[in-house]
Length: 362
Image (cartoon, rainbow, N blue to C red; front, side, top):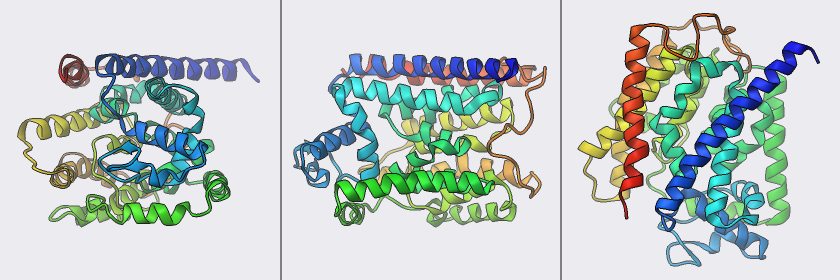
């Protein structure tokens, strides 16, 4: 290993540790402030414990079941299997550990992109993902790091985007092989899990694809005009595959960013979406909320990403390596007043989003 390679590994490890520390600190603050407030990860933790005890997790999690949750267990069994290592910790510690590990993997996968992509940490997509202990950071990491492809099996509807973003045959095979190993393990552990999972998701009317949301959703099909590009295929997959409309699942779209400004603008757009829903949204049911959020996300986030992609040539770009090596002008800080202004706005929005839950919901 050359000196440059050792230096690169140290830098990536440093970024991974920094991301993990910052994320764990916020997750811990949320847990200390509101220890009884459940996250999306809690259902998986309880499901994994139930599975280890010899029970069917799909009969243990949901409305009126052993672990009270407002919905059935919509996750496939691979998500439960991958949660097992965290069951050695109490549920609160497991939440924090899961978020920290996900952040570290995302930081490692970023590599040299950290110079242009670090504002991801200030996006509403990332902050809410940490707050909910969601899979979004590691799914984004899997788009850049095929060795993490096995994680796609945990949330295949969103993770499929990371799969189709692979340009190289060997990377696609590696990701698929990882998924296959996890799925086969699930059938060994619990042969009937697939039928239970299908039954659970059949009762989820809020799970839908963005392209079916009229009137603007079908416009996302225009991403097919740039089908040679990994970022276009990723956007198309996210738009086509049904999933629960959410702010955190928008995190995978940061794969399409190619500069500090693009990352900052996309992070601002996720903040605008969140605060717009908070201040202007009025929903009587969760299904109405999901529908409203999904429609707003198309206008505020999806279509701007689509516009950026359509302005790029229909040529393959390498999803593994950065588009270009960081130059002297691509520092960790803004290089001009426009970027500085955008970053300032993002910092203000992110500060409020981090601070607000820590002083409310008592």
